[in-house]
Length: 148
Ligand code: CA2
Image (cartoon, rainbow, N blue to C red; front, side):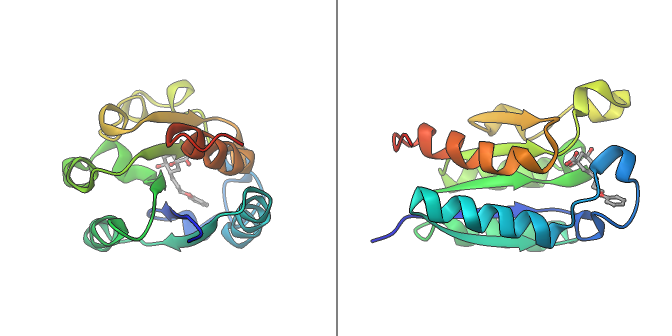
């Protein structure tokens, strides 16, 4: 059976490409989804590409990933810096999670330097804009032992 990856995007990422292009680029979330679908084809995997502005809904999606997806790529947006609940959800699902950010969160405001996700993620990719998504797909498959 074809392996599947959940690519989950958090709050405000639906607005990509409409505001703050100097920080997040001019690529829209639909462009990023297309990029991920192209990459998925070359890797021979399926993807479920999702976005939610709601913490509880993101937790439900993470819980639902068990037994369906082989791992998760998570851009949790600002919840990265605030949500112990998302961290606990990641710990509970026993699936590899790659933390992803468009911007380099370590080069920005101090409150963005802390991630509740990082300690329970297999790794973090940040600062490469939309190109980080296909990088994260390679990294996740590498982490589960399915090297490109
Ligand atoms: O760099 C990233 O990917 C972030 O996860 C994006 C979050 C931010 O809170 C994190 O610190 C880093 C914010 C996403 C907001 O996206 C917007 C898009 C267009 C206009 C305004 C916000």
